[in-house]
Picture 1: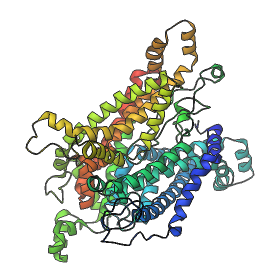
Picture 2: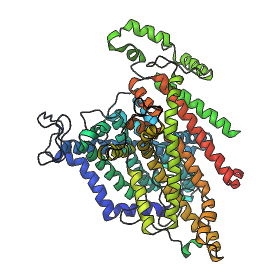
Picture 3: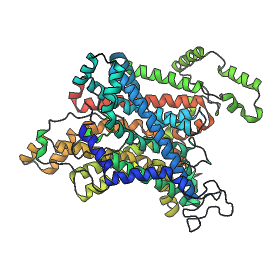
Picture 4: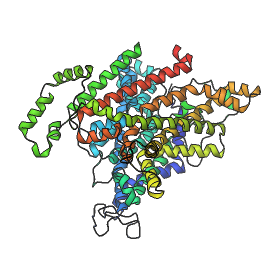
Length: 328
Length: 312
């Protein structure tokens, strides 16, 4: 059974539609277009104004070649968010393809693909990304490809579970008995049913991709300077921290604020209220759910697990895992 | 038995995949080995011949698999020594760091989770849970840098990087001080996620029928929490913790780079930069083994704690 219950998806949809959700999504969209609106040059080197602390001339200070940090931060947002968005779309497409294949073709394809998915989920993805970084030249394109290619597994598992569930539905049988091909059944009948689920996985995947880009670029294997991203602005930050702490604090706070905002949207906890479990009468009507075995399915880039927060309507670890159905 | 076959197949596939990915790489290792000054096409050919890179791909694969089975994992292009030796030398530092961080995350994560669940809905619960969400949302490299800023720059009491002060390598107290910041950085997010997980697992159990019965029969709240709820919630918590173990490798890449800690993580980033393929191969092999072992351990522990799982 998928733990992406209809109510879970609806809940996140509702949260996305709330004032807070619209504010976060609006702010992110604004960050994508902002570089065209801000009259600042992120590449202008000014050796007269090297390492200037934040002040009236440079609101967020300058870096070691006198470039304006605000301008670089704004342009970096576009790079980081753009790469994360593209990588997310790639991961969703790949995951849907593999998941549908495994769920619909059954037996052998399923066994092989799911082994692959299991291992892919368990294998440290940052390590996989770095292996590829060792052999392809760094840049936005390869980075999108690599992040997407190492993060489709959660989607695949989810889509597979959903397709298997839908394969037993009456309308699937009806379509099939009318002569619809498997690909038509999946495309025309199953996929529309999966959009809500995919939107939610996409949201989680998006914040994970942001973190991935930032981490890889921080390590120096992502987008290369002078093109700024939030990750490579922090490159070498562990030494800059002694001389110019604003160079470290500003991009870091931007990154963290974005990730916290996204977490508050997608992962079951809004900043204004924490879901509270009802321990009162309602629960005896729920059949006791089996203890789900956690899988290493939702991992962020540096090996940290995703937030697992109990759901307001559906208590327990099962509901708390936003991306993963337990293995059925 | 099925598990053993699965494990063997998975590791076999990993060995092949890593080999293929690295061998198909453009810009061979000869350039890196020779350096820009001494690089000539003739020399490149000789290097490729010595390394066996000029043979056909299937032939290389067979040679590689045979070498792996014999424990021959190649010679590091950079260190000019057996790659497995290079990796083994770094293993100790990573194990100390990772082991301490894992222990700390277990202790802190479990206690915070139990505390939050016990005070469910109170300000304590809200503070801890929001705090945990914030910690998880913080990129660990930035958390590390933030801790350097706090501990070394502002307070000036803790060293920012390295393994030990020069000349005092034998001094345990001095070495421990160098461990504090990296261990904290590495443990933080795991502790936070374990806390949230423990909290939600406990709350689920606390909402179940048998707890209500126990409460109705007059069992004390403390006894219910520690005796009944915690043991019922143990399976998913233990599994989660065991699976975390595999991901300490990823954590070590970031944390060791930030803190200049000479372990496997730092070796990974350095080897990526140098395209030292043999070393990367050895590390991937180890990573695969750790992942598979952690999964097996999680399975075994689950069966140990809950015999029902074994029957499925």
